[in-house]
Length: 399
Image 1 (cartoon, one colour):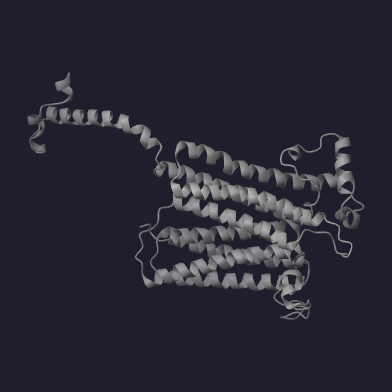
Image 2 (cartoon, rainbow, N blue to C red):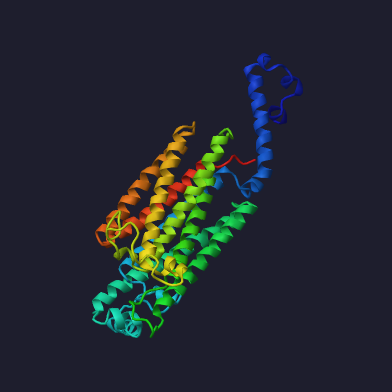
């Protein structure tokens, strides 16, 4: 039996062309036996080392998580547009997961809401059925946030135990999980600003535009980091010659991506101040290119964050600048030999940029209808996603 498994050396030492079919079979059988014996001792070690298959699993998981973050951003935008964000006046991680069940519980929750400025100043004629609508909007947003947290934390624990993470990836996923936790705390900190009594103010109660932009900005950062990491695990880097034009295109794409992010972030100030409801004309603002009250607040810097006119003006300028930059990126890339995927990504980015600007103008001219405004907010995330894809396609080959 041993000889059948391990043929004599003189049978294996001949030139491959001189071996008979029997000798070839014996040689193959001998090699396979060695492979099986050796493989048995290394299978446990191989299972704990990240490889291409585990990288695909982790990459798909991170892209799935980034999709859930998009859902949270869209839900948050709808919550803001329907003025539902201040309907839940408490924050409990577990207890609030169950909404009111009986009529008495709903009455008690409505009674708590009536103690805060939004009801006293804005919604003093609100009925219980109307309260239930805004409550469920905010409850859905908070529950989705908890789903996002579980989607990050539970697979992280599982993949860590399975040995799917490299040392650098461990740091990245810990950072992402920490960011999810921070995002939840920041959300409550934002809501709290809209529940505070402000006797000196006669304005409509709303959350701080600073905290709103911080909450949105952190969500966008979480999304960008998750999507970038997922794409780099799933999409192999292209072998592109490092020419001067390619380096220029890469820098151009990075700058354009930063501009798209800044434009999306400026939209939080527009939403926070309801700035979309002033100057509902385009391209001019009340028949003027530069409105009279652009710098009405003092000091001047205050206008950029608290003056609705200035905030809307800045968002317009940033949107047009982003469109111009993306158009330039597209035209510059047409003069270069790029991989097919990179060309598709840049083309889709350009198409989405024009769609997003059209959505923004329509939202403004129609006095911010909720469905169109929500679509415009979702478009900003789609544009940012395509910008990240372009950067992933143009990234350098790892050394």
